[in-house]
Length: 325
Image (cartoon, rainbow, N blue to C red; front, side, top):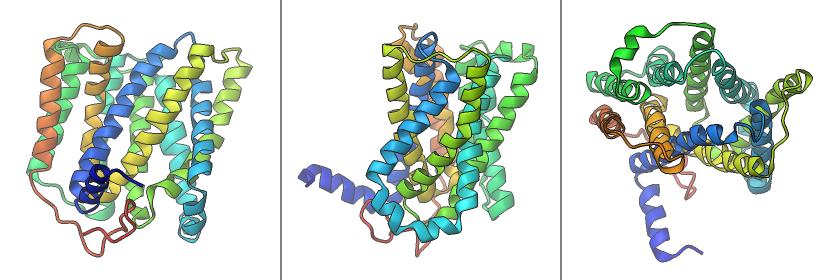
C-alpha cells in the first residue's frame, strides 16, 4: 500500500498526462546521460558488445519476472503487432546500440553528440509524413534551440570547432543509427492502448536475440572480455537505468504526448551526460555546461508552449487502469 503522499502524487500524475510525460522523459534523458558515464567507466572492465548482450539479457529476465501477467493479458494485441515489435527491438534498440559503439571507433565524440541532436528533427518530420502531425513554428524554434545547446556542450563551448568537422564512415553509421531510433519512437504511436511493460517485454527479447551475433563476432575476433567484478556492477547499472527505467519511461512519455514532442527531450541527454561527468568523473564544471542546459531547457519550454489537447478516448492510463482524461 502506498504512503498517502505517494498515492496523491500518483493520482495527480494519472490525471495530468502532460506532467507525467515531462517527468518520464526527463527521467529517460537522465538515465541515458548516465549511460555515457557508464560507457567510460566500462573501458577495460568489459567489452562493448558483451555489454549490449548482457544488458538485454538482464532486462529480459527482469521483464519476465514483473510483467508476465500483463504480457498474458495483452498478448492478443501484442500478437497483432508482433512483426512491428520485433523490428523495433532488433533495429531501434540492438542495432542502434551496436552502431553507436561501432561508430565510436571511427568518429569523434563531438560528431556523435551533434549527430544525435538530429533525432528530434527526424521524429518531427517523420510524424508529419507518417501521421500528418503538424508542428508549429514555436516547436521548430524550440528544437533548433535544443540543437544549439547540444552543439555548445559537444564542442566544450568552442563553436568554431564546427567549421573544422570532417565526415567519415563512423558519421554515416551514426546517422543511420539515429534514423533507426527515430523509427522506433515513431512506431510507438501505433501501439497506443497497450501498457509500456508488455510492449517493452517483447522488444527487449528481440533486442537480446539480435545482439547475439555481434557478441559472437567479438568472441571470434578475440576482442571479447568478460566483466571484472567492477564490470559486473557497471553492467547491472546499465541494465537498470538506461536499459530498463529509461525505455519504459520513454514509452510512457510517447504514449502521453506523442513521438514528435517527446523526441525534443532527447537533446537533454548530452547535457545530463556532461553534468554527470563533472559529478562522477571529476571533470571541471565550465560555463558552457550551464548555458547548454539553459538552451536545451528553454528550447523544450518553447516547443511545449502550444498546448495540444489529449484526444478522447485516449490510451488507457497505465498507472491506474482507467482512461486518460
